[in-house]
Length: 286
Image (tube, rainbow, N blue to C red; front, side):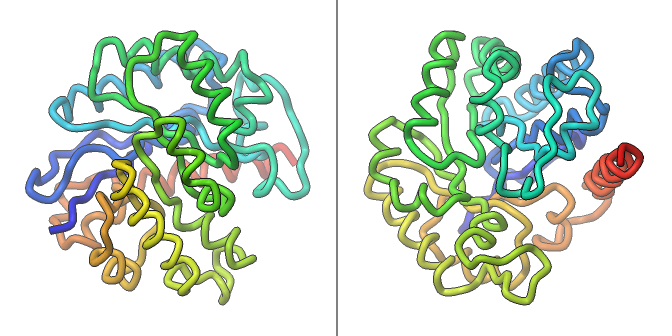
């Protein structure tokens, strides 16, 4: 039977049926900061993020927890209190987001990595996931930073940019423990489309080939391979039969996709509320 993991965006960690769930596939750190409207440079942001990640590690102490480093686009980050630099990007979806921003502003990135590294000395189940990465050289820089900070956990990468698929062997040589396929960005960047477009089809043969090839590579290499994102019923039915380690489901989608009681997931509106708060702040800034 396929095992699932939960993706959290600041929701109170719920009780999960252990026969179906195997820990946390990602904590999306940017939503925790967007919720309070403050960047990682501020004391409040560091305190809030530390406390939240610690609560998740404690809640699921016998299971793995993967923290995904913050994955903002520039309009989102520009409206946060304490932002280190403001940029206007016309094509921000393809711009300075994820690990790209981290490696451009390393001192700020180290603030986030230091927090997770400190927690990794207390919680052996805490690991780190690097988003919007394109090549092994970027990962080498991240590993160097983590080593300097005495990080104790495992590290993995998001497969969103197709170059990761083309360089799986090179990434494996850097001892990644986790490859998590971000289905939405991967579909966009592989099919040359955008979310909401009639051409945006995560079940397209090209996307399914990437999933299958990566899952096969993972089995051969001893690397876990997961799929994450906004997953439809149709995609679920397909990938549940693939050789994946986990499907990562957003908190808000679990009741519908797995027919679990909605009362067990009382914060299904939180993600929408956070997005609306950011959208309003962006509109007010314009």
